[in-house]
Structure formats: C-alpha cells, structure tokens
Image (cartoon, rainbow, N blue to C red; front, side):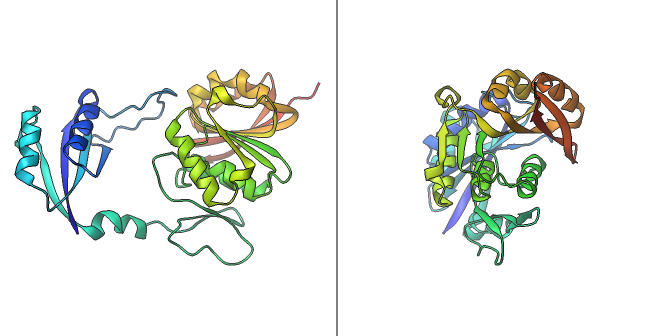
Length: 292
C-alpha cells in the first residue's frame, strides 16, 4: 500500500484548524513540524506551542480521490496552490524510521530498547519503549542524563516520584532498578495514557500509581525525579520540596546552563544542590535534603 502526504505551511493561529480540516478529510495521521528552525525551550506547563512557520502534514491512502480532497480544502479556504503533495511508498513512512532506532545504553547496564528489537543479552536492565506522543525516549540529553544517574545510583528499596512523567521512562527505569513504588504524575492525559501502557508493557504496572497532580497521594517519597523545564521547576519548588521525605533526594532536569543558578536558588531553602552533569547546553541538578 502506498500513501499520499499533503503538506501546508501556515502560522500557529491556523495550524490547529488546518489539522482538524485534514482529519475531517480522511487523514490517517496529522503532524506538526518546524519550518523555520525555531527552538521552543520554555513552553508554559499547560500549553502546546507551535512555531512561527509551522508545517502541517496529513497522511492519506494513495488510492483515495485526490481531486475530491483538494476540492474539500478549497471549499474550506485553502487553494490547491498552497498544498504540496508527495507520494510515499509504504516503507518510507512506516518502516524507515524504525530502522533508525536501536537499543541505547545509559550507564553500565541500563538499556532502552524499541519493542521490535531483541533486548541486549547479559547482565542488563532493559526498558522496552517505543516512540510516541508523550515526551521521553532517552534520545534527549535531559532524559539521557537522568537515566545515567539512575544507573549509577540504583534506587533499590526506595519510593520514587516522577513529576512530569511523560512516557514514564524514568519511573519505569527506577522500578526495574529496584524501586519499590513509583508515583507517576503529569497534567497531560495523553502522557498518563502512554505511561500506563509503558508500565504494563514492562511488567511494572502493579508498582506504579499514575495520576494527575491534583490526584496525587499525600505520602512522601525517597527520590523525586522532575525532568520538566526551568520555569515550571522554579514555580513548583515549594510543592516538590514537600513531596520529598526528611532523608530524601531530588533530581532536576530540563534546565539550560544559564538557568541552573536560578533553579538551584529556588530549591536551596530545602536542599543542598549540586550540578551532576552538563551536556549539549543542558544541566542535571541533584538535591540532598538539608538536615536540621
């Protein structure tokens, strides 16, 4: 089976409407891409920002009626001259991206492995995880640094909270490395759904409590992981501090180097903060609860 990809360049204000229009026209998938090389470092916690120039693309079965599709778009205010049409063989969109993804090692024995690969042999801990709509596959430096820290500091016997869990990759890794319980928290329902699926796929769903922030249990944890961004980390400092027990630690990521001091200052009333790693302009901070 072959496919037809239809692309449109637009602005953030129109992108969502065009996506809905493509879906109503029968698109099997709709994606947004940056068409202007514009990084988005600090979105607000509840927002889904788009780029100044956003490419919206829809994937349609190639055996569909192209003329009818273009007429549908034209009747909705999008002239055919604004559309870019490409024919894609099946392999190009559904298989080639899979071939580029391989098992990745973090530290000495922790691996993240796509489900279509055989897990590595030997004395290893393997998290099975496929790319999805929720953030967290291990490819971003902020996630990679957290995974390496967990590998070198196995949370055996600890209660862990993963605040802003995304795909659940950090909490699942912590459980497979010996944590007794993980609370996975995210405001995005899509992330909570992905986290549940991934926990089930790794055989740890019985050890994971997955919830929105307002549904969190009142108990504290021994280790809090928060791979978010600097601005929400600063805003959440009092809340996250009260979630960590008197002898606990926290790990903060998603922080640009120039933001590290501000984040460390926000947590300094409760924790002694140390910079653990730097990578590609990002920083990993570790906090140890102050005594007395």
